[in-house]
Length: 171
Image (cartoon, rainbow, N blue to C red; front, top):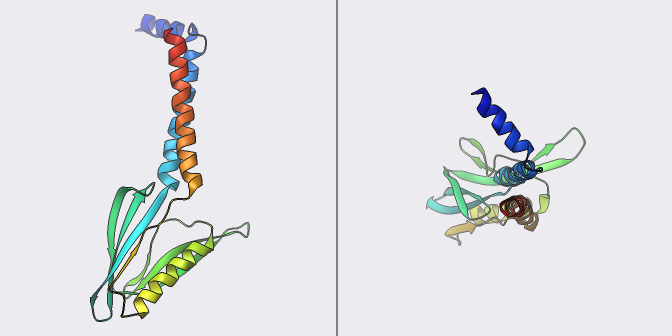
């Protein structure tokens, strides 16, 4: 066992930093994927009128706007609001909340900056609730361009670093 460990360490040290470049490439790609998983989520929802005055919405959480992660239902939606969270530094973040007979249900589990899109979304939902003319409301949240750039940038950098190192190592 001791000899195997020594041979492994010798192999790593004799590779002219190739092993560490591959390891760093994996770490960069992994960091990009983990951050993308947590920050590149969107929530699409579909609201319908079940009975007179009763609104039911299904919420589908997606990764990068296309890969469904989970689906939930909100019953008896009365209105939507923008919920504000003020940080200790004075900056505010926001999220959309549905007000129901049973309490408040947030569209997303996280707060984010940029009040305007959330206010527009709340306006759409409240206009749908107030109007009997529209039978269905379908909203698909868009993923911001910088999240795509972050995902492809980090992943490409990490994978590229691994491939270049492997090419140099195998040559």
